Length: 142
Image 1 (spheres, rainbow, N blue to C red):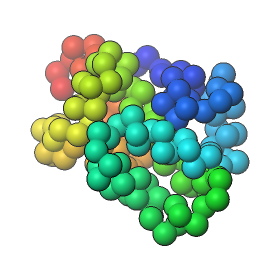
Image 2: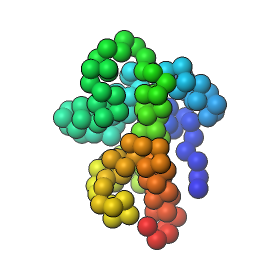
Image 3: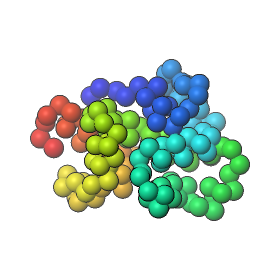
Image 4: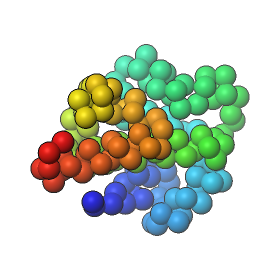
C-alpha cells in the first residue's frame, strides 16, 4: 500500500503551512484544526450546497459547528483529517477529482451497497475504504 503523504492530506484541507510529516499532522489534529479545514474538504468532495451541509453536519453537528469560533476539537479534527485522507487517497487512485467524487458517492458492493463516503465516517470504515481503493489501484479483485 502506498501511503498518501501528509502534504496531500493537508492540500485537501487547504492547510497552510502544510505539515511535512505525519507527526506534524498529528500535532495539528491534536491541537484542533481550523474550521476552514473541514469546510475545504467538504467543498472538494460535494458538488451542491445541500450535499455539503449534509456531510459537514455528519462530521460535526450543526449547532456545534456554528458554536465553534475558529478551531475544531481534537475529536472533530480527527474526523476532518480522516475525510481528507479518504478523499486524497481516492483522488490519487483515480487521478481525477470528478472520478474521486463519483467513487466516494456511489454505492459499492464490497461495502454492502453503502457509499464509500458513508462507510468512511468511522475509522474502521475508513480503513475498509482505503483497502478497497488500494485493491483497485493495484488491479486486485475488489
